[in-house]
Image 1 (cartoon, rainbow, N blue to C red):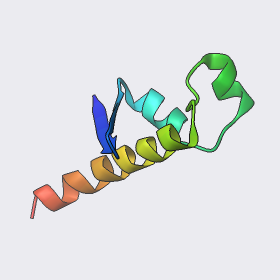
Image 2: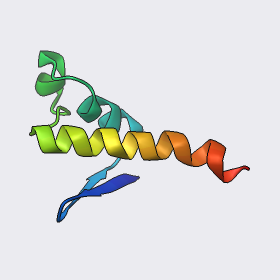
Image 3: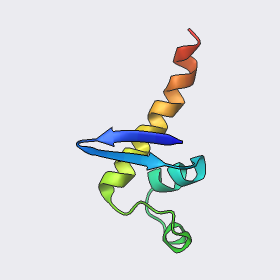
Image 4: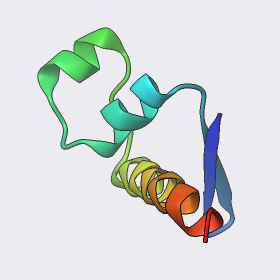
Amino acid sequence: MYHTTLGHQRYTFDSLRTLLAKASPARSGDYLAGVAALSAEERMAARMALAADLFAGPLDSL
């Protein structure tokens, strides 16, 4: 599970698939599949959660 807080709102993403879909630029296929970010804020939160996850692994091993 992936999560981040943006302002006073906590965003939670259940899977990597959902996180990647919500972090990427809006595409009609994502909307049809029901996995697109519903707002620019949710898209930014997904990007922040993705960045935090990507950088957590290598830095933890130092």
